[in-house]
Image (cartoon, rainbow, N blue to C red; front, side):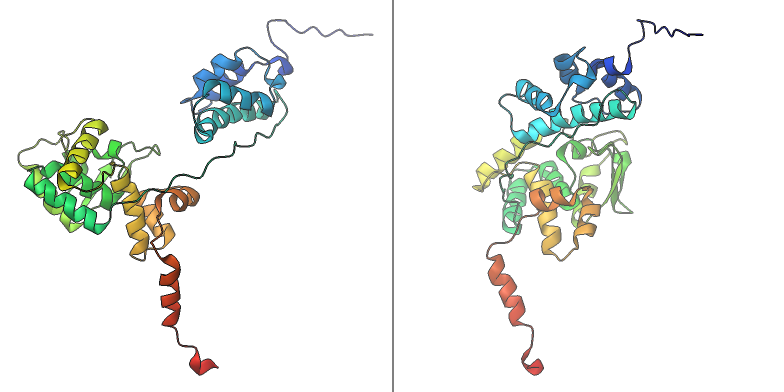
Length: 289
């Protein structure tokens, strides 16, 4: 006896699942939707199984024609790959390998040296801008991002315990930072009668802070360094220069990737080869000969 099996046309076969359907499932199961929508608009109802690595790279170029490969990797290839991998895990398509586009090495930037920081803080004192000096010191000594620093409220600061909580950081989790005596002293001076919900540094957006930093640099006749450069870049470089091991420095500043930390944020000293040679000069091998 022959049995016939009927499949309702209302339920697509696995091979007929579209990118849009896979993306919806991906988001429903906790996927990151930050850059997904433009990709959904691009692929739409195209069958997931018909999308290959070449198509994904073409999509990246179409969505971000003037942006760098780093941006295309981050905002196009990575989220598209996540959706396709999710589809594979559900049995809707084959597993494909999408190679990242070749990225140009990041341009090296110069962090804030102790001399620069001294000149900047001195100019802030002349200009009566204690909040500018305090937020720059806070970022350079805690590795806080500007978006995190401006959102710190007095309720998040424990001056007695010398620590501050960065709420909802870029990594998605709160992060505890420990404060130096200098930062604690300056925060004591700023506190006054501020309420627990008040912003510690008063600023509400990064642009205002960078405008202030730029103006102070101009009056002090020193090079301009953005909040990110005199913050996380300076923290990373100074931590390594002071002899901190890489893991400790990364944990203190909440870095997750050693590649990013060393390749982007840690800046080598000038004359590094000469410094290493001088260190070797201090080692005594004569007695071993």
